[in-house]
Amino acid sequence: MSTPKKELSVDQDCLAKYDNDLNKAITDLKTREWELKQMESKQDETIVEHVYVLDETKKVTDQQLKEAQEQLQKDAVYIRSLEKAKVNRSLPGGRAFFRGNRVTWIKRSVQSPPPKQGPNQNVRKI
Image (cartoon, rainbow, N blue to C red; front, side, top):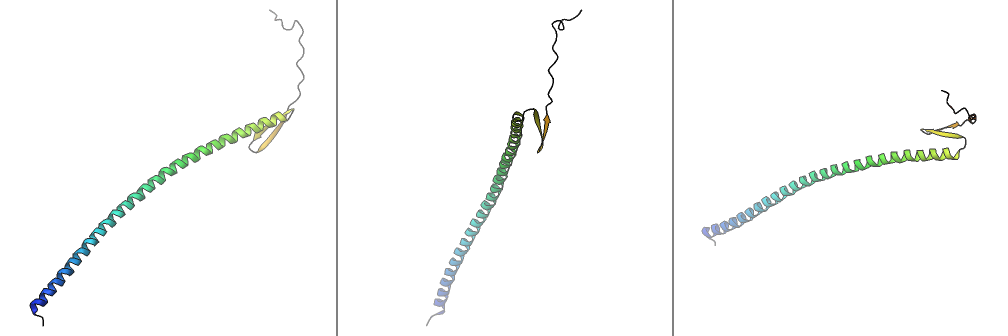
């Protein structure tokens, strides 16, 4: 039969083992909690960095879009002037004017040549 001292010794050994296991589990939990906080901190920094990068990218693309729209407008004006020149050259006796999407045709009137001057008409009288 076991004696009370032996049982006490066995119980103390079990308690010490459980105590060690508990301390190890607590240490592991604290370590994992610290790692989790570090990861959350890095995640917040990453989110802030991504927002900053997205803002900068948006500024760049907005500027590029603005420049492209300006170039498109310049090209449209240039194309219209080329179309005007083409129409004006291809249509004898008149001239086309563009206003928006409308074309106005103005017919040139035929002018009579200026009267001939005699030999003495260029002389100034004093």
